[in-house]
Length: 402
Ligand SMILES: Cc1ncc(COP(=O)(O)O)c(C=O)c1O
Image (tube, rainbow, N blue to C red; front, side):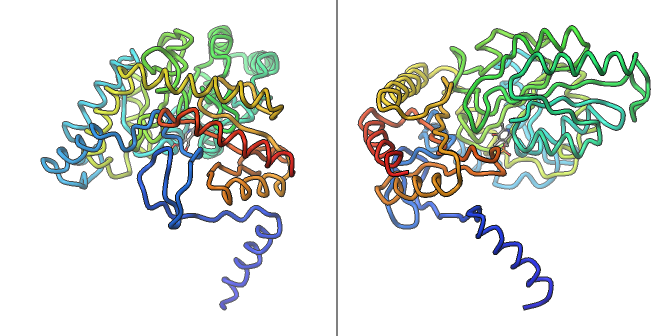
């Protein structure tokens, strides 16, 4: 072993001792309520494919047809030669769907968040973030070199006092890197990815307007799930583009495909095209993925029974879990975490479920704060009540043993 590998191995061993060593398992089936992983069949509550579109025949067929007419690879970045009619038409459809002037595709949600925050904020600017924001938003805040200020989860009062303090201190000084008036960006998950609760966007938007800050919402887990047409948090709260000027969605969750988008004004999207480095310096998504997403967008908007079944399952799970005394959280979305505390307890419970044929996410720090390890249970429109009954029975047993 080289000295470098020995050094890496020491850190890996430490990770193992902390019970935080992560391992990949290999799926051998498409996303669905029942999946095959490492040769065994499981009932799965671990995917973000909330509407069951990742293997929907219309989505698969749109992908196949587009691959036949456009091939697989896009060949270049959007700005060089990779922007196809499939990408363009999806961007227009996403703009209509979100009620924004324009939308822009990114290769992943992580890159969209990096791109937006670092294009809009820099030295001298302020980025305010909820403590429980997704890692991609927090990382983007660091990379942007703006001053990053984190406020307690959903604590509007604390955010207000931080904004008020900054306004007093700065008095409109023009010292940001771009020479514009110091910019304030308030950044938040629409639906918190590990907790499933919804950010108080109406209050956040009012606060942003009062303190001349821009509100950025990453609604990765709200699109498809919330709103009559699956328009996510902004549809749920009926928020306009003035109230939420920067809206991010990811396509790998309820859309069932891959990639991400940012929706907003003409000026915002042109700014991202010119200045967002993760947009500029990367190969465009495969065009067939864009075509498949257009098929999934139509289903996500118009297949009302599908969304309705998901919401019935969420209510059924919550009712059953509450009657068993399981520690559910305040979540009306497809993410239904059971917080168990220390890492060992979480791992034991997840292993017990797996040994009994049920897959759930075992989420531990640093993904969640210390002492709040949890089973991240995600529901899917393809589950049925009998699936939930089986899950609940096993959860009750797992929690009784822990
Ligand atoms: C809130 C949130 N934003 C962004 C992302 C990143 O999206 P992607 O997986 O497309 O990179 C995720 C999850 O992965 C997420 O949960």
